[in-house]
Structure formats: structure tokens, C-alpha cells
Image (spheres, protein in one colour):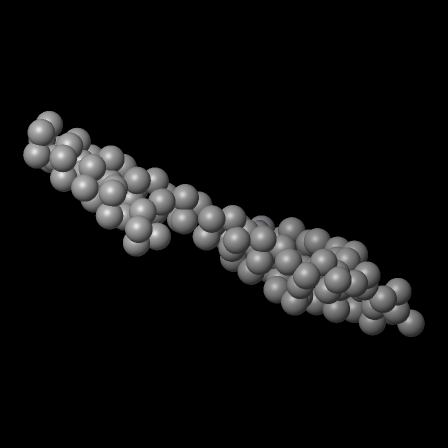
Length: 104
Ligand SMILES: [Zn+2]
């Protein structure tokens, strides 16, 4: 890597002295911005994957109980069929309340 940097630095100095340093600094800046934006996007994609991760944790709800989530704001009720995670779903911008009814 260091052996590659020496000729690149020499070429950069030659270009900078002969044509002006903007021809050296602008591509460097563009490269840095490109690396930074790709790294930012990669973090977003990794976060999204982590949220929906662990599909083995998704277990069907047992038949002896019925779990409902209800929204305090508008009164919507949602019946839970398969539990993917322990977090309650959101509605109207807030977490829904969980209510479990035990059937006989
Ligand atoms: Zn709601």
C-alpha cells in the first residue's frame, strides 16, 4: 500500500505544480465524499436488516390465548397471529397497548 502511495503522491505533486492544486484536491475531496456517503448508506441498510432480523424468533401465538393490541388514540384493535418480536406495534405515532385474553 505504501509502495503504491509514493508514485501517486509524486504524480499528484507534478499535477499540482504544473496545472494547479485544484486538480489534486478536488478529486481527493470527491473520493472522500463518495466513501463517506457509501458508508452512511451501508449503516442504514445494516440497521434495517437488524430490525427485521432473527426470523426464528417469529412464533405463532398459542390457541389457548388471544392477544390484541389496541390504540389509545383512535381505538383501533389488532389481533396478533404471529409474534415476531416482543415490541408492540405502533399506531397514531405511539406504541399500542397489549391485552391478552385467556380462552378456556
Ligand atoms: Zn391509532
